[in-house]
Amino acid sequence: MATTTEAPPTPTQPDPPGPPRPRRDDDTRTTPRWLYAVLSVGLLVTAVPFAWMLVSSFKPERELRAVPPTFWPEDVTLANYESLFTRLDFPTYFLNSALVAIAVTVGNLVFCSMLGYALAKLDFPGKRVVFGLVLGTLMVPGVVTFVPLFVLTTNIGLTNTLPGMILPFLAGPFGVFLMRQFILSLPDELIQAARVDGAGELRIFVSVILPLCGPALATLGVLTFLTSWNNFLWPLVVATSEDKYTLPVALALYSVGQNATQYGLLLAGAVVVVIPVIAVFLVLQRHIMQGIAMTGIK
Amino acid sequence: MAAVSTTPTGTGRPVRPRRSRHVDPTRRSQAIAAWVLALPFVVLFLVFTAGPVLASLGMSFTDLRSTDVRDPFAVEVVGLGNYADLVQDPLFLKVTRNTLLYLLLGVPLTMAVALAAAVGLNRVTRLRGFFRVGFYLPVVTSIVAVSVVWKFLLRERGGLLTTAAGWVGLDVPGLLDSTTWALPTLVVMAVWRNFGTLMVVFLAGLQTVPREQLEAAEVDGASAWSRFRHITLPTLRPTLLFGAVITGIGYLQFFEEAFVMTKGGPLDSTRSVTFFTYDQFGFGNYGYAAAASYLLFLAIVLLTFVQFRVLREKD
Image (cartoon, rainbow over all chains, first blue to last red):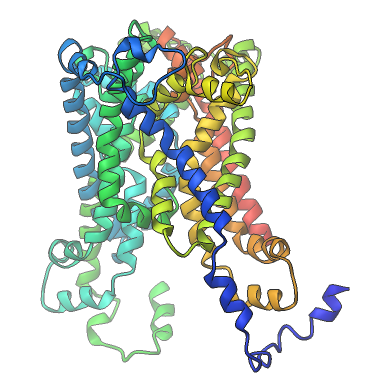
């Protein structure tokens, strides 16, 4: 019924704009109060675990076991952090995490922009195959490759080393895809003009293309750093002695090991893992949001 | 052949002598430069991704154990033996069930929360960026760290949840100690941590919903729900499917949450396929672990394939 009466007028709708439409404007301008209330409750649910983590990490162990729990620490203490950094070896874990994340980020920025440019702007035999491989790899989960990777790193002596943690992640398909998409949007005329001026192909990449890739490189850099900082399965497998643990590995193993009931220590550990990331995110969130909107993948 | 057919298509612009395709030195140097640029990625890819993906498949047909790693000739080919054992292994069947349950509960819930948040944010004019950043925050944080915090919040004695439930007179036990509730609890945490990604994707998708149609429908007296149901949702369909698949691929691999919060328990009720693979690797059963991981890989490929099929059918 609705279809028969509606169908004819819809395509020839242009006439209605004649009468004034005050109602519509009002509707889009005023957002109902309840919506803000619901969103605020949602925000609270998102934030409470982090807030609880932060304040609790300053409580002494005794207070953490209090029933009912306290929110604000009754006596504020740094003891948990002191234990992390003196009794346990968190400075080493922090350094390992940072070194791995920095190396992985630099590698991805360099290698992914190189291939991204080739795929976006150059013609070469095998291009379709390489791009197909990049897309195919996006699907490959770490759980499929970690067993043979472990055999490989054992045989070339990279097990329990930082290079062993870095190399498998040095050039990811996500980065190639992101850089290709961005470079595609740069005008071809720039490259043509540089060629006319006699610049070599690699020269064009370094001096013409790369300087224009700032936003994409920033997005890729932030996302890669965060992913590497939070990476778990492979570091867990490949780090076989404590001095090679990254932060997530150390925290996870402590939380299921002999320190499992030392809440203060674990919460302070969680703060050390999470707070730098939140800080980076809040400063650079624009780049992250752009990356997701551009590719749909975190 | 290709060169012949492309020349007439470039009718728009005048033919420049520089661009003649047959004896073009720039084409050659382009190809060389492209391969130089592609080489590092391709080498790393072959060694650390393609190689292991194939090796994993190969291993899954053998009885390779950790003790054989330095002596590959001691390994025997067992054909499909590992796979045959897996489908009869009660623990593997249990972890498969857990993983599927996690997927089937987690994906719709995450999508629903993300869609609601996106639609809500889309209607908000002030503070939109603020809310968006807030909702997205958990996505960037380490699952391990978040799991440590949630484990602390969900403790039976002195945990935030039990206490808060006590205020309203509810008696909530330690959810992570229950074979019934541990897995759904992990799902809820996954929703909490992950909906931000889909929210941003859906929010971008909502910008493509034709405004004129929405307005026309409103003038025709369609209710807000009916406008959402008949205009917004159909437009978002590809975005929603895409979201379902990327979320599903992630959830099929869940591991860290269970590792930290429940150690796979109680009674293996939160052990996942990835967890099983990691365990078998730890026991030294590399061939068996590889076979389990390949079944998971197969599920992921299938999920992706189904998405492409569904998308193509409707287009």
